Image (cartoon, rainbow, N blue to C red; front, side, top):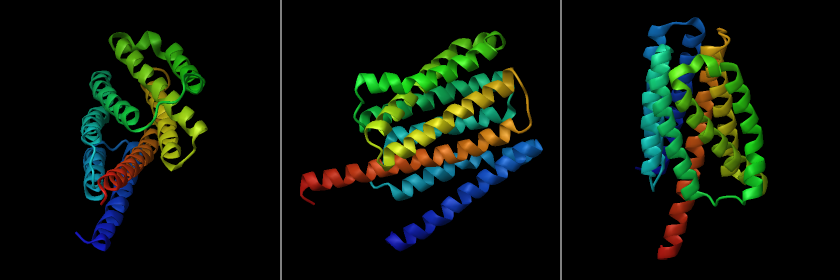
Length: 234
């Protein structure tokens, strides 16, 4: 496929992604379940096709992560305690794949910057836990494991950004911060204080966070392609 055609299709898909994301946010605000069901499930497939179209050296772990995220999104639509538990399980698998991608592609920071980077995320997690610990019941262990991965990703991305604030590390840090606030809002909304605005705000942040993660993985794929081409003398 010619580059101009590919760029044109990519531009249309990006617009479509944010259009669908906007419709999903509005549907969450209006509490229109039908509109949510016919919009939100299309977000990850659009992002997958964007990635498939633009990455010359595709990362299967990222494709699997998108699949897990897609399942989690569908489960989260109903927003009951049972479906949220199921969605949290798949979102945990998504986080595991993201951690794998980052650790495999990016040099792990030194231990001191990493631990310092974990501190703000640790306090956010402790704050959320103290508010909802008695309400989560059977899902508490899954919540803790998700929290551990959240803290790890936070420390990893913040430390790498401090040590080297290139484009990839910047995108990853912003994405991780957004995902952290999403977990905070969703958990508080479900178990502590229900406000109409929490769901649409969380979804708007999710749309942006997932796109930024896609962009960072795409850049990493491009750099890896350049490296392999240079190594092979292409």
